[in-house]
Length: 256
Image 1 (tube, rainbow, N blue to C red):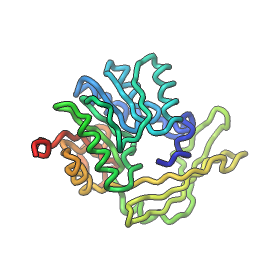
Image 2 (cartoon, helix red, strand yellow; image 1 turned 180 degrees about the vertical axis):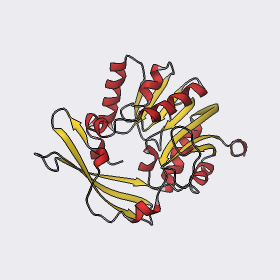
Image 3 (tube, rainbow, N blue to C red; image 1 turned 180 degrees about the horizontal axis):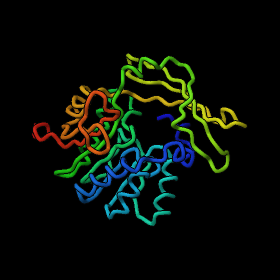
Image 4 (cartoon, one colour; image 1 turned 90 degrees about the horizontal axis):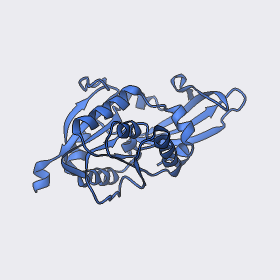
């Protein structure tokens, strides 16, 4: 994980405030499954706290202490109980199972090696109750965008936000793509008009291609049940911006 990127939970929430439609999707999945929910890479609890507020027993695992502190504050502000655990999604062992496991907001893509991805997904399988499901989202890699990752610093106007202390914050990103590793290596620059580059942090995310994902799941004893291309459950196509997946235990693998 790129620790400096997640060292300021409040700043992260302003940069990535969470989309209502994504929160709504995971709340609906929790309601559909019923029972308990585990989120791996829970961040500041943007999705898990509303799920807990809906009455689900909720547990959140997060590696970053700063993000975990932000999640605790969010839950306290909402007046809901969530069990928070500091830990690595590759090696989690909570000693119990859950009806729904969530890996949201590209959290899976912080794992760059195939072995790490499979270890994480096998942890998911161990934590799924009978009939339980995994719901996750990762972006759908665009070869055109990856080819344009040339290391040039560019402004991301869509990410501009207002900080109560600093004012308007602009975001620039310079990225290169390591095709052999399938990893985009970026540097993010946050600036105001009076304080240029007040924060410069790395962010590296793996690409998981559509034909690769079912193989990774199969190696972990899971299978893909549904794959949507948007938060309204539209069909997944080559042009879809995300891979929004619902998975379950592969019974054949479980019995083998």
